[in-house]
Image 1 (tube, rainbow, N blue to C red):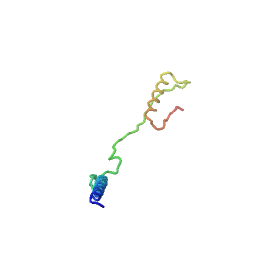
Image 2 (image 1 turned 120 degrees about the horizontal axis):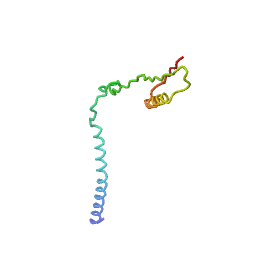
Image 3 (image 1 turned 90 degrees about the vertical axis):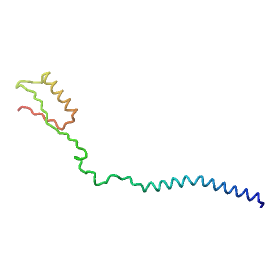
Image 4 (image 1 turned 30 degrees about the vertical axis):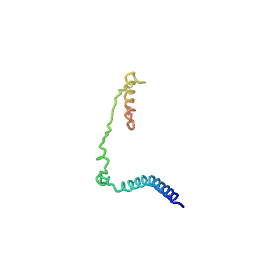
Length: 109
């Protein structure tokens, strides 16, 4: 081989190494950053310091109370009057929206 041929090969080899280096360096930088990210101390909350009781963490209180509607019924009545029907339907409309539990109806004996 002549000197000029060896110089060409050396240049080609050097440019090939430079190309590989340009591809490997970013990959190594990403790998190094990822490995160092695992060493970061980001935990500022100790697990035992969070209360377990739901009444402490979520203090929402909903109280149920009994509601009463009085519809007078006469001894000889065979049906409801318009006012009684409107009062009952209004009560039941509000009762349905409040999603209350069981409905109890007391009738005279």
